[in-house]
Amino acid sequence: MANAVIILGAGLGTRMNSDLPKVLHPIAGAPMLVHAMQAAMVLDPARRLVVAGYEAAQVEKAALAHDPDVTVVVQAEQLGTGHAVAQAQAALADFVGDALVLYGDTPFIRPDTLEAMMEARQTHDIVVLGFEVEDPARYGRLILTDGQLDRIVEYKDATEAERAVTLCNSGVIAADAATLFDLVAAIGNDNAAGEYYLTDIIAIARARGLTATVVECAEAETLGINSRFELAQAEALFQNGARMTALDDGVTLIAPETVYFAYDTVIGRDAVIEPNVVFGPGVTVESGATIRAFSHLEGCHVSRGAIVGPYARLRPGAELAENTRVGNFVEVKNAVIAEGAKVNHLSYIGDADIGPRSNIGAGTITCNYDGVSKHHTTIGADVFIGSNTMLVAPVSVGDAAMTASGSVITRDVPAGDLAVARARQDNKTGFAVRLFDKLRAQKAKGQ
Ligand code: UD1
Ligand code: MG
Image (cartoon, rainbow, N blue to C red; front, top):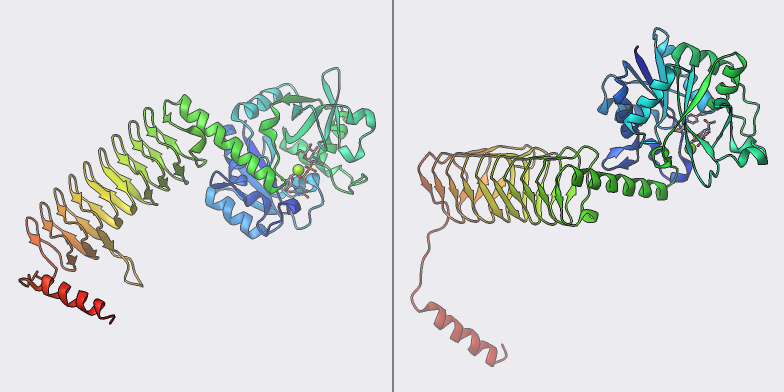
């Protein structure tokens, strides 16, 4: 049967104290909304909806950037979670199947938890995801009788006896879509908050003779983020998980607590990651590559046997082939470095192709920007670029060519040639001795 997912993200998130909508605050380089959207993908949902409200245009842009097929509906006024779900009804008018409601500020639901909920849907009309917690604080409480979920009571509306219940509502709910919208239409707002509570659908469903049950998960999975402190906690939780996953996958992390991953970092078995490495979004590192200490990588690919760093910066579009070397204080952007090529020291390689086995000397710069446009540098195979060469793009250097150290290369260098583009050296015999004498004499006279 087809599934639809509805992600609620209309809230302002007052406690974040931010102009950015809460669901767009990033965890591991991706908005928390994207984490929630990604979590739902295990159900292979045919229809995916996000309910936006506060700064809806920004939320829509971020949602579409991650998933161009997502439908964003706007909840103009935030009248409660039940009202938010109702906003999705029109967009799902033609949909037949199950709907799963998730929160955009609850990014860590595990795939197998959602699968367990869909499994429970086989035998119950409504499935709610709950969790046991020692101090349930202000969460909604799940009230059960004989294993059947009877109702959910919000903290504000709960009696002392109900507040003593430690089984809490995560907010995640699954039901047949048509049933869900029927129930939501029957919700009122006669409660302590004056809101349309989605949680009220349980009591309404039970009164109509429908069944409801609870699937339980760990509290950490349902961690809701409401403040900067909770955001930082969520980041730490994500990073710890990512480090454990990398170690389990056979990656060596010498000091795991100093390595930061993005939500989508992929690292192969037997890769070695030294201390203090930061992965931004879009990085893949193949088996057996080494990322040395204090390197920063983003939007790049590092192949087998490559060694990066220490202190290297790989920016979007950096493609390192097998057995390449990118050393200290080297920045690479939108450039392909072919097999066995080396850029070992103090260089900027941007908008370039470097052929196999070529060696780029220390201090080489591809001058890719003229103040208006970017231009490309092409370097062939087995080239030797002398130290401190400026390659003023667009420019190309043919196979097995050389540039003399300190050259400013403004014209193409044919294959096999040596390009020398610097002032010729002139040694003035004995001049240094005479100049030193003169300078010292001036100093002695106090001049
Ligand atoms: C909700 C649940 C509570 C549960 C808790 C878990 C209700 C009534 N209560 O409470 O039982 O224990 O989550 O964290 O559902 N949202 C909208 N539009 C609105 C209101 C909310 O889109 O009009 C979105 C928010 O952006 C957020 C989510 O729904 O992503 C949850 O809203 P929030 O106000 O945080 O609900 P809680 O009071 O935490
Ligand atoms: Mg909340």
